[in-house]
Image (cartoon, rainbow, N blue to C red; front, side, top):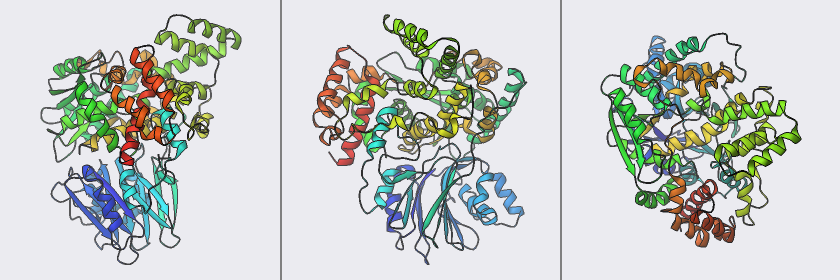
Length: 620
């Protein structure tokens, strides 16, 4: 795992070096830079040593030095690719996967991407063609940002690093800030800064020195239409089990210690059970618990660990610790991310880093195999719309909302209320923030409404007629998974120099999941295929009856250790001072939450994260 950077006009290598130096946490073990002496293109890397610890220095070149490569991530099939290349006459100076990229490009050019299985963001400089190629993995596990200024293209693994290569500090993008406060993350290729972009997953950027221009193309996409499958759940589980086992074995291959995160839910228990039986040695697992609230996963994780006979470790994240760690963590992020699980994952990653260099997690299982309850509610809502007159449905929803408050009653009212897929899905994934966020907006945000372009991707909306659950899954795979789930996982772990891997995002396994209709995935409470695989493993049969992940007691924390931080934001935070947030409205919402009159966690947490992040950016 590494941090990579580069510039197309950098003859002394100063910009690439400055950007790489800002990512020591991504690569504390080594660093390197290459500058083309003829045209001044530079590429640089910081390295966390995982494969060929002693010999994996980057950048790496082919035999004659005409092709240079830097890599952030892992190419899981690098060993088989190396053997194939050797048979074609290539010679290797190391065992690192980065060197495979240089030789593979020499034979196949940009088409090399179709041979790769892994998580990666890499850059290749082709000195003969005077061409720079940037590539991001299929699901967006590894980040890659770029900006073009005055015919100079710069790229880096993190926004904070990219800023070190720019001559002037980029301005905040108001539309992106609104999207963040709505979703809790910045979606798509947009970033929190104007004129700075993130390369889409499964995309390739090519820049030519002849034209000083770049082009972006997509090299892979998930199949949108499932097959008409006749197999039983048992037969599907046979195929899924074999694919998952191969994926798990590949994610545990490393020249350094590997462990895994265990939440006590189905996904991590399934991976841990496979790993404990197929990986040599005793598996080390890690989880997190809390000193307040009732959402900790410690008990469930311990029970799973005992069944699997693994070496299990647990860290407790206390209220006192989060009060001091959250401002530091928010400031370390290259752009704000309000996924509450970031706090838990960062804590357990730091704890695990004492024993392992690589950790395996269960990210992607919910989006690929239909795990979120929202998918089933979306399906029910579509049935109601088809079978119930709109006026009757609206009247029933109104009556339910007048009943005593309850999460399931509220969701039932939402199901009955007539609405199209795009609007309903956005309302549900934003936890009510779509309307309430405007109450807090100051003059610099009042005119912005990112929901106008966030309701659904146009090319998805007509791809699955009548299949709203499948459409919701496809939308999450395209937006929520890369921009929130995987971005959170990357930053939480790499800030403590820990590499994280995800078996469920194996290409073959993902394409297998996409071939299955959503109705099959949603059977038996969701993730029907994974549940059937788990049912066959006695040690974890019955695990994960309810969805579990690294949740946090956010409501309690916002009334407790985060309350002083919130009050400071309302009085002297940069969001307020710069006119993004209205202070009086924010203080009113803080008071209502603190008194227990209402639970405003869904909005107060993104505001706090954005405020702490902006304070750090401004140096206050």
